[in-house]
Length: 498
Ligand SMILES: [Mg+2]
Image (cartoon, protein in one colour):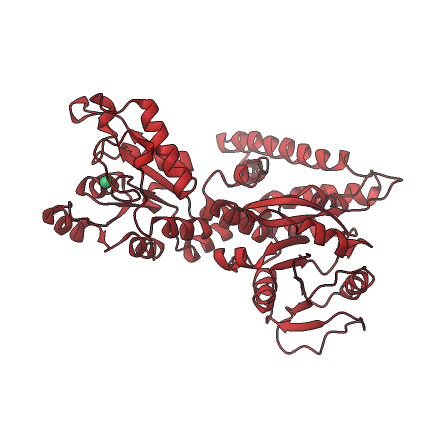
């Protein structure tokens, strides 16, 4: 049986919306339970001009808060198992509903299925810069131009992050969180055409605002965020070098013969070379018409400083708005699993009550999770490295994947720098995740866990058990936070960066 689905289309009232709705109307059954058009125009605009179709269509208002907020308003309105998001400037294929129904017939662990985006390009010449930008959608992972999510999956991770103000990165952020919780995002067979936009002359300059969203991604998901969403290196590093060379090159205006002036000449030469390389690279991929040459020359001068300015603005904003910790690192024994002294038998692994839901909540919020564990049983020969590996694998089987697992196999007498309360494990975990250790929270059941966190510069939450000494709890009340259970500890961690 075909699972029921709702189509959600956020719009700012573009005329392309009518073409989209007609293309859905022309599809064969199964029909959507509802089409939710989310009107995201600010203020009190006149009603949308919608075509007359046979489809049950509802208009929901979201008040100009951006596509993330508009899509959230749409799926929250929907009552079906699946929600198919479409951008308002696409046209669905003639058998789209039929193919979508096939795409939705998937295993329970599939949280989302993505449509195939086709971008028709002019055949008689190379695409312009703007056309290449749109064509990039065809290969992009996780974009919401045609993406169907399970409603329950959206609810579990809290939907789109409304701190992303434009249609950029909010889709990758959502998919990343959905995958962290343990769902798969798969490619479907339905096809949707995304016509090439008629972009204004300055479109490539306007697109630089996306650098602010990259800064938010960096703050939310650490230095490795591009790798996590399957993207290559960005250009911001070379833009920063070009911009710095341009600023330093202003020293060419220093008095003739001064050392400052010769320095300026050198910097200006770097700026000219870097800008030329950027402009030529863009031009070579497009049509060499005189209009395109002028456009590439002018925008290639302006893009690097503009990109840097947006990145700095975004980083400042992210520092203000991101309250979540950069990572939460858990002690293992008596924190996420019930302690069995020198545990070497994987069949004895038992999660602590609440651990699974606490971890799921963090993953859904996009917060990386890790384990930092002392295992001196290895040093004194009570646990073999293989047994340790089997126990940790069982922990993952029961509680889901951890983004980093750091284990100290040494004993006290080894004098290592990683056995808690030394800070080594915490520092190593932060380094592997590519996050600032000062924005990490360590959750553990002993004074050594708190001590290691404090020594590394991280925050700590102690969750005492009956074996935790009163003095350790007292000390933690002064230097860290104390919570009665793992779920309350995660509550504290989520608000710890305020
Ligand atoms: Mg412990």
